[in-house]
Image: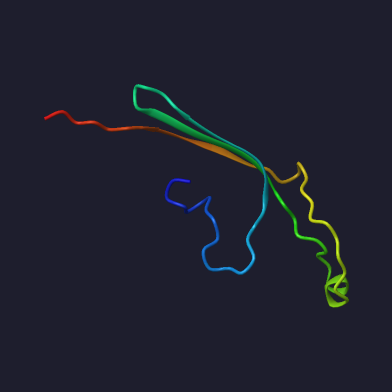
Amino acid sequence: MGSRRLVAADDYRNTTNGYTGLRADLAWRAGWSATAIYTLPQQRRPDDRASLARNAVAPDREGFDLVLWGGMLARAHWRKR
C-alpha cells in the first residue's frame, strides 16, 4: 500500500508472510478512492527449536492479539489547462 514502506509483499524471500483478513477498494465518481485493510498475520508453527529439529508439523495460526489494520484515502489530481 502506498510507498510499500509499511505494508508490502516480500520480494526476495523464499517464504512469504501469510495473512487472514479483508481488503476493500472503493472508488467514487468525484475522483476519490479508498483502500481499507483488516488482517490477522499468521504465526508460523511450530516455533520452538525442538519441534523444528525433529521436523514436526503443526498448522499455522492467527489470533486477535496481533492485528494489522489501516487505510488509505486518495484523490485524483486533475489540472485543467
